[in-house]
Image (cartoon, rainbow, N blue to C red; front, side, top):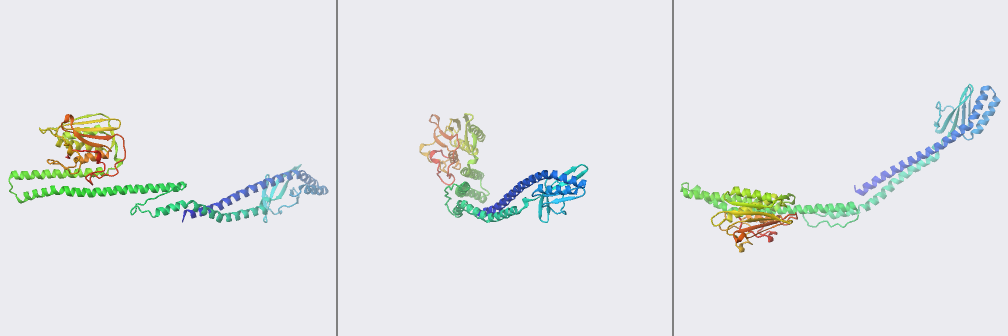
Length: 487
């Protein structure tokens, strides 16, 4: 059932009930006013004829019939248009319109009451009449005008008005509701053909001035926008998963084939000399470690591509740097790693991503930043300003040639002697861009070694619209970054 029809039916039922209730209340008020007027006249007539009623009872008690007749006539003349009934010890005198003697009267009616008989009603008032050694009652009656034909006519008219009000008010309410819900029906027709799964057409709504309709249109627009956003994120997730599978299958093929060859050698030559056997097992261990590292790096790239803004919190960079330096020291106890960090420097960031950035920077310089004697000396610095936090990692190694600084960001790019996955600095660049920052590489202090410098804004902002670090060899946010050969 349409909303306009529901409104029409509801109003068509409600208005007659209101008319009936109003008519009933009006009739009650009019009847009360008429009763008050009747009761006032009854009291006035009772007060006017009371002396004649006393005289009548006195004459009757004294046995003076002629005087009693005279008093009775005077009593009826004073009563005018009301009924009179005087009940004495030995006789009852009646005159004027009143109920028959068989009508049941209350023992006493100090206040006016209604007496009904044979379809007629009267207002009745009793007044005690007391004289010396004689007691009687004066009854005064008047036709009950509150129950006359006029009031019955008003009742019928109220009922007829209620019957007419039902269809008229229902039709009027239906018409008004139909016009009021017109914008809602038009909105429904525009949205009925929208299918976000098969079309990119979206709701274009012009404000109608009807608050509820405009709010509903805004809500529908928000829902569709969220659907598009989630569909885009789902598409990115699927594309990332496909790229993960493709990259993993491509990069794992060579080490797996190498491991398979070594296993064939061990299986086919059980009597292989010990030096050769040791060499083959060493190759297996190296390839196994490379496989594990590659899978971990690919997983981290996928997490960075899919992380949501809700995961970003306030992160203390100095604390993260201290934890990364401590972990690097445990991995390489012989390396000399120092940290100089200003306390209290925070950014709006993803803590696992920032920790990943620091861990990979340190892993890279420990692998490629050693001096000619093979010693690793690394200096980590964290400083800041009102707008950004700067992280520097310096080594004393051979440095990075200027011509290589623009290419080392690419996925799976490894140096000729690198045993890593080629994704370490890709992760560094990814996290720098994800935090709306940049990473650069240049000459180290005094022109010796290399310096990696990461700049991160301290305030939050929008995440990159497109994150394809795992999908492609170059991301949309890489133009601000230069990197060192990956570990």
